[in-house]
Length: 329
Ligand code: C5P
Image (cartoon, rainbow, N blue to C red):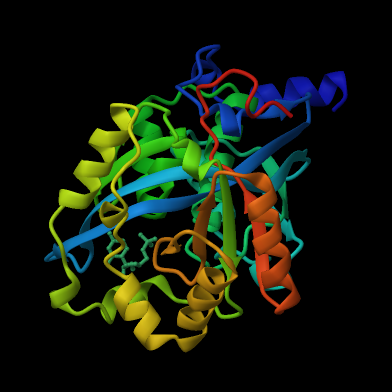
């Protein structure tokens, strides 16, 4: 951006909204900015636990879930444009539309602060879609945080939380990321100490070749699969104390019904175990499964075996945003 354009751009922002103080921002999502371009990474998550407590009067479900950021990410580039539009160019054509949460996130920030500055959002997808890895939610949170930092907007944590919650139940988690217990619809986020068991140092993420609608999985969950929050609390307590959680507490209320309804997912779980994964769990509403490994060589061996069977498998790891140097790029 040239000097004059820079001036026009800044004038288009409401001057008292500009602040040097950014709200707490996940290190994983810290944006790299120059004057007219801003790059940001949007990381995926897995659910260590997912307890569905029951259906609410508003149609949503109360949850208790322990989520962890992993280092599979989408890359987003924001560019200031001369007009007042929000435009999206995505590497997945089916996501290049106004319904994409990144477009909605940009509109929301602009509306909230009456900003007219246009922006082009380029979205390079790596996180599988409709997979239970929170890709769309993470993209949305990353855009909110990037705009805040790039345009130096004065937005309180509660402003950020409001916008995030209105975009989706998982979006608030991605405002900070890391390891957290999420409750309510998912919007009540409590950070946990960034401890990760050695036995889970490496994570294989296997995405069966189907997409699953979150709403459909919630709708089809029988009340008999509801649980209380015992598992999520036990896992939170263990991790906060620097201990490895009990295997039986790594519980996902959806796993039974998703495996029953989608044979591809059940088959993939069996194949992961057969190939040597110590245990396998569903992430979110699926269909992605994750398996932890303590040794890279074992994880790689199982990954190669599964890939030779035609599966889409990512070798990943947990990211602790508070640990210096972990996520620098
Ligand atoms: O909040 P989000 O738009 O991501 O949710 C997608 C759908 O998943 C909702 O429309 C709802 O059907 C279901 N859902 C739910 N309870 C939650 C989160 C999501 O029933 N806590």
